Amino acid sequence: MLSDAPLKNLDYSVVQQCMHCGLCLPTCPTYDATKNERNSPRGRISLMRAIADDRLEPSRAFAEEMYFCLGCLACMTACPAGVNYAELFEHARAEAEASGVLYSPKRSLIRDFTLRWLFMDLHRLQWVGRALRLYQRLGLQSFVRRSGLLRLLPNRLRELEAMTPAIQPRFSADLIEPFTPAIGKARFHVALLTGCAQDLIFSDVNRDTSEVLTRNGCDVSTPPEQLCCGSLHAHNGELELARRLAKKQIDQFPPEKFDAIITNAAGCGSHLKHYSKLLQNEPAYLRRAELWDAKIKDIHEWLAEIGIDPPPASNGSERTVTYHEACHLCHGQKITSQPRQVLRAIPNLKLVELPESTWCCGSAGIYNLIQPEMANELLERKLKQIKTTGADVVATGNPGCLLQIINGAKRQGGRLRVVHPITLLADAYRSLPR
Image 1 (cartoon, helix red, strand yellow):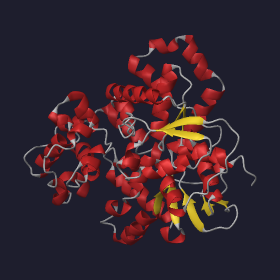
Image 2 (tube, helix red, strand yellow):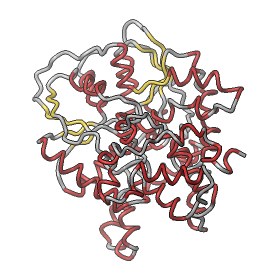
Image 3 (cartoon, one colour):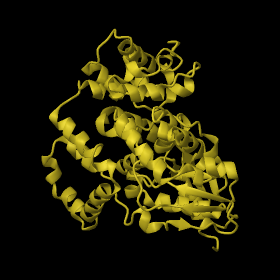
Image 4 (cartoon, one colour):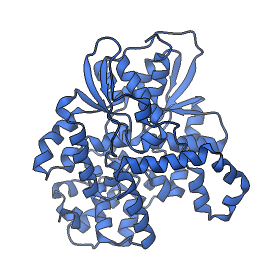
């Protein structure tokens, strides 16, 4: 099976493309922090190639190094040779999982529950979300935090509890109709992906996205029963599960039926645009996957492509906003100017550029859960840069980044608002008559 030796079965031209020039080194957050060659893209690729060449067996040290990598893809932006580190990274983690070198009963149980059960079915995920929402709304979470009971837990569990996201009062299907007509003349028919964790934590962003699309001439189809896109699985070494989810997505959203398929989550979008690579050995799906890749559009990308209908100026007070670039938007999808176009279209908004705007905030999927020390170091660096801008609002286009910076700002006790750019645009549209 291909999954038994992912690096050996990967196209060797991808493995050997790195010239070891080192131009990626200054852009890599882990190398910047440690200055260890093994913690750099170049060092990691050397390990991958050694395994592909049968010069090295997968080891625990190799697997731990692959999970120490953020997968932020900043190295891809810097690379003059065009090395496809995203593909290498996914196959290296799949190699780590196939080898079993990280196996423990606890780790296996966690992965079985999350990747193979919870995130394979929206109903299961929403059931857990409803239970957590009830726990929060009944005041039990506040009671537990005030009671001192958490002091009985190990420090790491206390940290994880503090990161628990607030579950939205209503999920996406309760906020968005399956079909929402354009306001005015319809120019396009698009599908809206509502995601998995996004549906629980940021369903309001999905609602805002639908409203913005209708304001810009789009009929919007939003099926209520959606699935995880598979990015979580692909980024954590479960390529077969990612393929299974990709095929289900294509079946649910036939790409030939829509002018575009819209995502508002940077990490999901970066994965969604490569279904044809993921399904290259699936003849029944390959042609449709290629069409799918062409139809997938990040919301900022789509609005810039069709032209943003700007809200008229209002008499409100000016807000100062800065923009943090989600790694998988700027490095994975090469989308940098379009979110700024969205923000500049909003009246009474002053955009101040963020120093190191493309430097990772430390969220990186589940990185902040499995590598808390490095994630916190990166978060502190990001918050310091945000403070220099004097902005009272931070905009960013990825749920992981939103949650990471929200939690960091909360710990610091400030009044920083952290929000998706599309929410700011939706707020401006809501002052207009429908």
